Image (cartoon, rainbow, N blue to C red; front, top):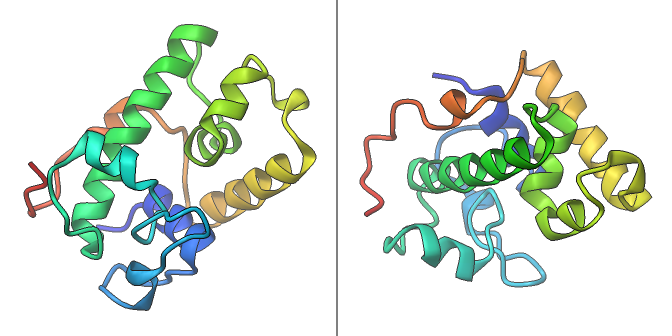
Length: 145
């Protein structure tokens, strides 16, 4: 089943345009990020014992867990669900975003521009509100624990 969030994150992070395994799953970012979703290795290890970061299903399950925690923290701090542009900041620059009090207007222009590109992709894929139930729905068939 297609997921606008999954598709937009994969596309903006590594250019992945298909849910099937491929070259984007092997991209290692400039700071050592792994998977099509570009997760820092230490963060990956905090969420799973799996080393199968090149499997898109495993990577998506880990990504959803990470995002669910970050969205929960955002909701607790702000009292509302994040807009898609904010979800990307929670994904890509969580420390920076939290450090400016989750205030979009205080986010670095470079980060904000990328988050807006993500939001456009997300909306083009048919995305709506990003809620925790959407992040914690049915798990992938592959185990990550």
